Amino acid sequence: MATKTNPLQFIQQVRAEVAKVVWPTRREVVLTTVMVFIMATLTAIFFFVVDLLIRTGLQGLLGMFG
Image (cartoon, rainbow, N blue to C red; front, side, top):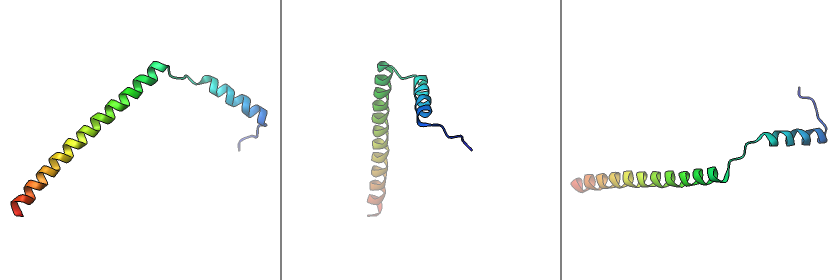
């Protein structure tokens, strides 16, 4: 079972852990944000093309029988 710590010790421990965090630089944040937007755009284009191919194929298939 975990031992209880008083609130002051808890805050000191939290501050010590937060001090260990390595925060990303502004450049890293901008680069990863741009990469997310690029990947989201590429994914959207991919699914648009797949949807277009499926729709065209189904319309052709239904056109032959309809």
